[in-house]
Amino acid sequence: METPQSDSQNGLDTCNQEVEILRDQVEALKRQLIDAQRLTALGELVGTTTHEFNNILMTIMNYTQMAMRHDDEEMRQKSFDRILDASQRAAKITNSVLGMARNRSDTKEPTDLSRIIDDALVLLEREMNKYRISLDVQMDTVPLSDVNGNQIQQVLLNLLINARQAMPDGGNLWIRLNHDKDTNCNHLIIRDAGSGIAEEKLRKIFDPFFTTKAGPDKSGKGGTGLGLSSCKHIIEDHQGKMRVESTVGIGTQFTIMLPVCESSSNADAA
Ligand code: ADP
Image (tube, rainbow, N blue to C red; front, side):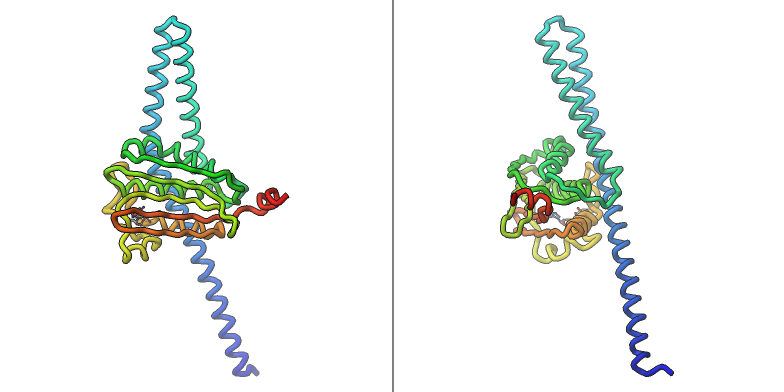
């Protein structure tokens, strides 16, 4: 015969199982959210990169015509150099976009974060110029972090596009990468001189679907309210942290803190 104690024990077990199921469901939903945001970001990127590709093709066509027209060896050489530069840039862009489209895996590997920043800047260079955003980038040589490169790029693109949108009349954007010895974390900082975020909104910006934007802007970006919530999930999934500081009328700073990977710490210590 069951004792009242075993009844309550059974009840507790059922309750624990239900909590476990709910926890799994929340995790699955988080992954879906990140994936939905990845697809949104991908769609946004396709718009930007298609324009960028047109520009590159124009450059290639113009310099090819120039090389065909001129007998002058120096002029032809210069044209070929420009064609090669433009083609390499095109290859870099397709690689970044294809990488983001293909990578759905959770694989993390020791990564040089400066490479991810460089890639994101290649993708957004044209957009930043168009909106008169002046970039100040300073990256220290830092130890490797164990990351999924495409997910971290997704985070960076989100933060950079948000920063650009906070400065509709142009402005300054600072990017810093450094290593914090005390915590053994790499710090990636993105600071803008934009509108800033009021205290009552600051508390909500990481909530899914919180947005102050009426919808996507002219370039088709933002307005879903999914960006920062996905960024936070991604960074936490990397055992990292995300911090935001903002002053209305002065600007906003996001700091991403990512642990250094063990092999890199060992290599440094050796
Ligand atoms: P979305 O960009 O689609 O609105 P996000 O989750 O990326 O969604 O951002 C949520 C909100 O946080 C934005 O609507 C905006 O109000 C605010 N925000 C985010 N980044 C910045 C920034 N750099 N400057 C000012 N406001 C920002």
